[in-house]
Image (cartoon, rainbow, N blue to C red; front, side, top):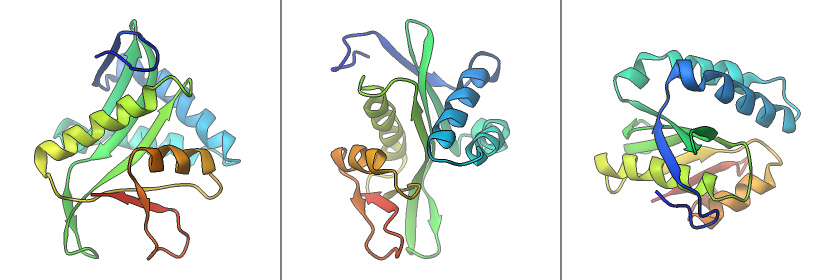
Length: 160
């Protein structure tokens, strides 16, 4: 896959613990530290990486590499029944890159969306943002996500 932004050869593949864990841990920790948090994202990412849901295919854990060097990762669910929405929804749980403005986040988001749409063409894709993360809000809006105005925090986004 070619990135429109960098012209580099980009490969997106499934998470392999032996190859990718140190990179994923470092990026997850740095992203949470930027938000002034202790790093709960690292423990949650570790749970997802070790989960049966990944091996059974309920959760997509994907890593983007350029020339064999990891540059980002995305974790998303496949469509699942939502009790509050009375339909199936899918969730982008985590998306992080080591270098911004290279097109890596967009490539990972497109990959996650394509995997979700293979299973259900119409379900909404949901995601939540940390308070004050205006950069992420602008990024997801650029890719068609809208703020869920029913959420008092305004930090829930969706895309149909």
